[in-house]
Length: 298
Image (cartoon, rainbow, N blue to C red; front, side):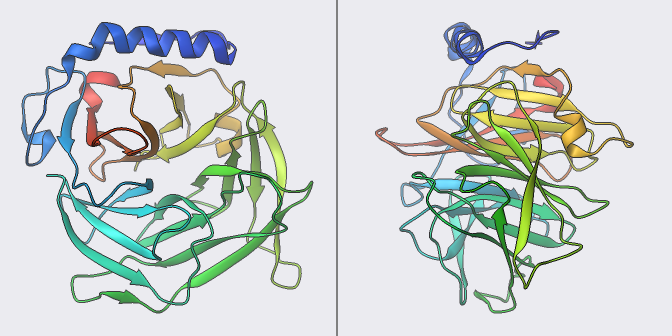
């Protein structure tokens, strides 16, 4: 079992060095596979499955409930307003169009119950006045276009921010956005209980001890939160009494991570057996879907 505990907070530089050290040590663990990676022997740190080359700019991902052994994936700015139904075997089995939506910069996806959330929250130059999150029921097998979509418009209380990660509190339905370019990354709370003329306001509720957050995921039982940067994965434990921002204010554990070309997407498996990561292709010739078994890394 490969584990590295972090009893104290550290800076970005040390985290990056530790993550890269793990990659050098564990790089030989990778196995190229087909089919469901979880059906194979789990002695390696992770299992890797090559992904269809058409999916080259993956930025958000969520495990599917209506389509077992599949993930919903979306791409970011400049790409079509659609979801890919990606099999655990790396093949694209369907595309579903989101009618009436705009992909200014889709950067993250999350699930709450039977609903999917796609967040248009990227802002590289930090110039936009407002952002939005799309909420809709997960498409079933007979749907190729989603027409019923709720658009959650919001702004930040203190100006523009670039974000690529968010989490949803299952009890309150509050949305917690985590910025990328602020140093350190900031945590903003978006409460949907009250709106100002249809425009919600996200307020600052905390900060992390590092920057460059590009993804986030919460386990189905709510006990584990993973925050992702380009060079590492950081695990936080959350108790039933804690809000998400309170959990992210605690110490964290650095998880072993296979460095990806431009890895942004992370999601837990619905059965809580582990989590997946997926990268944009960047300058690489291909990308793989990685599965990390709970028994190995958590």
